[in-house]
Image (cartoon, rainbow, N blue to C red):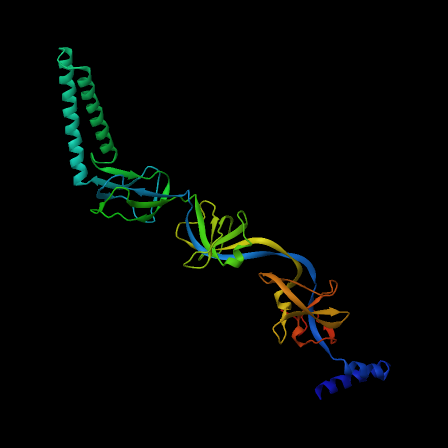
Length: 352
C-alpha cells in the first residue's frame, strides 16, 4: 500500500510535468533498488600460505658443546637464554677419579721410560746394550709422552673449561654442578643469533606450491612488525607426529631470538582474474558464490569461482562483463532484471 502511495505521488509529479500516464504505469511496475557500485578490474593477487612455528638455530648456527672425557661438573658460568661473547667461559669440567688416576699413571710411565732411556744410552756407550735395546727404550718414552699428551687434551690433568666458539646464545644446559658426565655427552647447546630460521609446518596440499627462495614475511607473536625473509627449505614429506610438511624460513640477523613463536605469510604464486572487494561476493541458497553486475542500469547475477583471497580482496573468474561495475552495497536485495539506482555520497543506503 505504501509503495502504491509513493508511486501515486510520483505519477502526479509526472502528470504535472506533462508526461504521458503510461510512463507512470511503467515506473510503478518496475521498482528499483538503491546501491553503490565498484569498478570491475582485471588484476592479480598473491597466493599466500600461512605457517606457524618457532625460531631456532639453523643447521650451521647451532653447536652442541660436549665433554671430551668423563668428569665432574665444576663451575657453571652461564644460564639458559644468556648471550655470550666468543671465547667466554661456559662450564668447568673437573677430571673424574678414574681420569685423575690414569693421568698420574701416565706421569709415572713417562718418568720410568725416560729413566730407562738414560740408562740404556749409558750402557750403549759402554757397549753393554745393543741398538735394538736403545730403540725399544726410546720408543717406550715416545709412547709414554703421547699417552700423557692425550690425557692432558681430554682434561685428565686438571680442570677443563669449555669456552664459546663464537658469539651466541645459550639455548640448553644439561650440566649441574657436581654431576658426572661421560665422554661425548652434551653439556650445553648454543645458537648463533645471526643464523636463525623459523621452523614451521604446512599442510601437504599447500606444500606442493612452495619452493626454496619464495618470499615471505614473518611476524613474531606480540609484535606488529612484519619482517621480510625467504624460504630456506621446503620439505617433501610430512612428519608423523603432526602430519605437516616441515618448512624452514631463513630470518635476517638481529630481528628474532631463539624460542620465539612466530607466523609467516609465504607468497608462492600470483593468481590472475577479476579483482573485487570481499563485500561484493554473495552466496546463493545452494552455497555457490555470485556477484551482481549493473549492466545499463539493470541487475545481472553472475555465478563466479573464487580463485583466491588476500586481505579484503578476492580474485574471481566467471562469465563477467568486463565493462560493467559490480554492486558493492544493496546487492542482497537484487534479482535479475531489477532496476538499479546509484547512491550518491552521503545518501541513505550507501556503503560506509
